[in-house]
Amino acid sequence: MFMLWVFWPNLAVQAKRWHDRNKSALWLLINFIPIAGPLWALIENGFLPGARGSNRFGDDPLDESETTPH
Figure 1: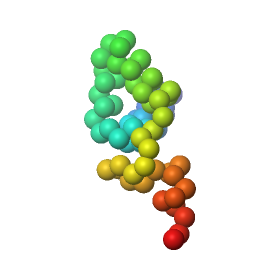
Figure 2: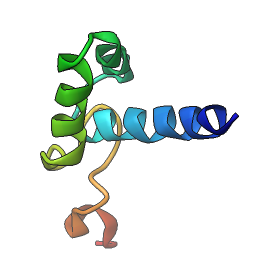
Figure 3: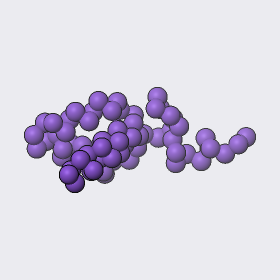
């Protein structure tokens, strides 16, 4: 039962993180590759920074120049 509670939020967070890296949420499927897939997802989503500036998924939430009114 605990796994069901954790599964959906995990997918949502990973999808948002893949978008931060300017990649499609279809990259979630990499988790199904034994051993290497979850390791790759951990490195990409946990240790590497997001793409700088706007991308096709929206504005960079950390970029102050895009959020301040001109």
